[in-house]
Length: 309
Image (cartoon, rainbow, N blue to C red; front, side, top):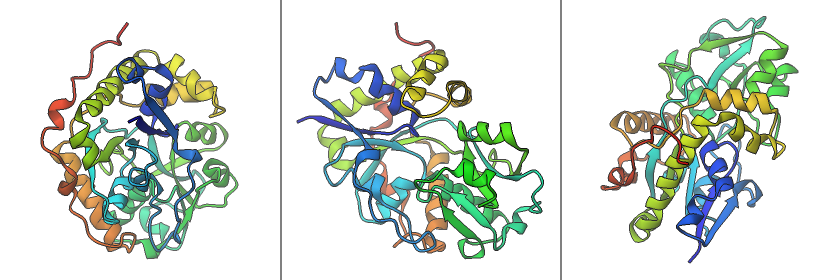
């Protein structure tokens, strides 16, 4: 049975791993599924729910393993899917910002009431926005969220089509080169913005050796990215994914390496799930610890000090 791994550029680790052939040294029969090519899942109105496509792919036969940001596994769990968290990255607080234009009349989070906030709905951006709004007692219904799916959020922000934006690098680099921006609230201390990897429970149990191979390969590849950010950036730029220098800057400012799921992560993820439900974006409450599996942490090798030869 082929090992199917879902990947896309926004999970930098899996994108690079796809191009380096490390998994194939141990498991020759690997299918890499670019999730951008899969049929899109339903996208409910941005005020009424979350899209489910990333999590659903694990259960419709598209792939066995995936890496995303905070929100997709929460959504998958809320729709009854039996996922298991495999590992997380370190905090990526320098990579994401909740910004307005420097000359914007919005000077505080309270000023967001009624304003248009650009997000990739269903991604980590939804969670970041909710954490910020909750900080001052605002809810999803107090703002006008704009789903940027399929659109260039940076350009919409530059054009003034949205009042605030949950942006990340390298897209933020292009904006910062053209206009002044202000962070409404520092991401550090608000949201850890980790990458995370998850799978189905049956895969984690029945194909544990293959899962261990994936994690070890990610660890090796992530160390290579850390030590060779320019070469790694070339893999993204070659796909038409933006400017080489911008990608190098982004990669140099992200943590690489797979870490075991921690208590702090679980608590933050549960808070995100509770906020999503309270704001009407999930069909039911979930318990994040239901997506944990004893023994997973022991299968994660330490982050190497230097890249493998």
